[in-house]
Image (tube, rainbow, N blue to C red):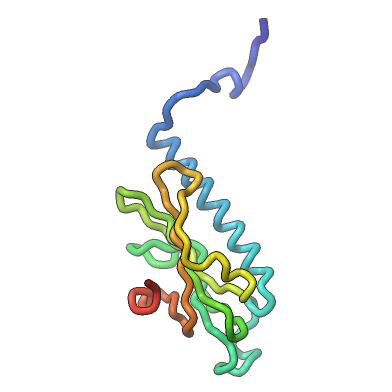
Length: 149
């Protein structure tokens, strides 16, 4: 007979409750934020300021790593710059009860294969919507309705 102590002793399969779904969603959001942060740091021109380049030669995008429609950008926003042919993006994570969080930033040409797709989230009941646009600050909250379809 095998005896288990600690947290493993109370581990059993059961339906997920609201608290468990919330924890799972937080884990997914944290994973997405970490991945987006890594992607944004690896973009060749993404961390450069507008002072470093002529304003008219680069695409300017709004960047926010966690945003809600009600509260706006929760972690502070900034601007990312990329050469022409790149895109701005917004990723929305939604469920049927109206929950919606967003991540915004910029993509190099090589990363644009992700533009305009929808897929199920690893958390049951949530969907991920990915949209790109190609004009300066087209992914800014005040511009999204007109520039992202």
